[in-house]
Amino acid sequence: MSILTMFKGVRLPRAAAPSPPVDLAPPEKVWIPLRQHQGRVCDPVVNPGDQVGLGQLVGTSEEFEAANVHASVSGTVEAIAEVYDPAGQKVAAVAIKNDGKDSAYVPEGGLPAPVGGVDDIMKTRPTRLLRRLRDAGLVRSATLGLPLHVDLSPPMAPRSYMFMTGIPVVRPIDTLIIRAVDVDPPVTPNQACLSEASAELEIGIIALARIAGAQRVVIAVPSGQPHEALAGLAAAKQWELAKINSANYPAAHRNLLVHSITGRVVPTPYGEPRDVGVAVQPLVTALDVGKVLTTGRPPVDRVFSVAGDVPNPQTFRVRLGTPIGEAIKAAGGLPANSGKVIVGGPMQGYAHFDLNTPVTKETCGVLVQSAEHVRSFRNEPCIHCGRCVQACPVNLVPAELSKLCEFQQFEDAADRDLLHCIECGCCAYVCPARRPMVHLLRYGKSEVLAERMEQ
Ligand code: SF4
Ligand code: SF4
Image 1 (cartoon, rainbow, N blue to C red):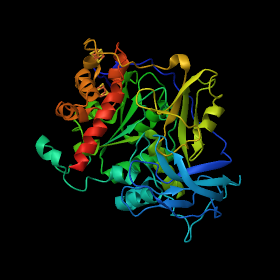
Image 2: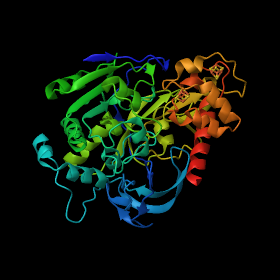
Image 3: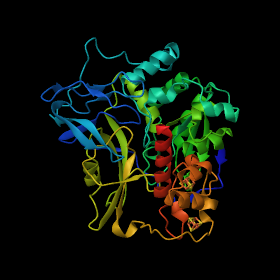
């Protein structure tokens, strides 16, 4: 076991160890968005008035970059209408009125045969396992997560930047990292599952390693939090354990995790861990994979943290499509002087305006802030203190980039590696002038990308 450290980024207050997730009662109505990932929107396969069972397919697509969506309660389809997704964009969704019966749907021809154990996994072809994950509509659990079958497939074509960096064009994956440490505490769904060491988790990890082709499995756990169950599982299966200091933000970011565990550098701006032979999956996704394979059913819930200024911060197991306001209510509700509700964590999340926004497969949780904890930004000039340069984990010069974006010098900013920014928010966190750094950088990146798509 090794203790891994990093030298840039910022030190955040260490979040308290979260307790294991508790079940939240299903709501009276769920809204199932037809896109719950980065990629294509599914087409609905049900109509208003239809009766649906728990786990029934309600949306699908022929496109590779799409993930099927399923009913998370049994009941009646009331409408197909637009809702705001967790990123604040409108997307079509299927509204289902819950009949409270949780009548499970069994497709014609029956459910796929459950996987009995590790031997079954090793006898099943990786492409068949991947097909089952695709049918179940699994998504890598993360803000703007990819469909899992896309994330686990090797790049389909050589990417041009690889020729410049000297990285082999298509490198086989040899390492699987299971990320049991959360990127943006105190929203901590993975750390809430640290006591999980079930047969489902074991099967999930083994299936992920088999699909990816990885011989080495490393479980990244937060230092300073009990993780005996995972340590025991790792020791039994001869997997490695790496301790990550979760107070060192953004140590658990995928690219930085790959570097600290394997020494490999993920090429930015467009590269991904799989380009350097590594697959990184959150612990909760490995659990979902295990459940899908052992039950033959698609996931209907997800682990969702409600953190911050609520009376009882808690991690819940929430039915997909539950309004985030219901989960906040279960944690005690908004404070009287409520300031912001941020979907995701404080550093990388998106402030949201609609508590009816449904929980989706890519939502990790929400942070509630009272008015006195809301950090206000000012459009003050930079005082050239250099703190943002010290903090930037990918060695950019955020002060210069933010000024170029502010004055719409987008191509100059791109020449100074604007697109390499991982939007971690460290520069905004340390800036004494309270400049809206991430806002300016996101604005600049979107303008550069829009310009390049037009060319
Ligand atoms: S410039 Fe980007 S990567 Fe660097 S600290 Fe700021 S947000 Fe993070
Ligand atoms: S931290 Fe803020 S004030 Fe200091 S150099 Fe960076 S942008 Fe300027």
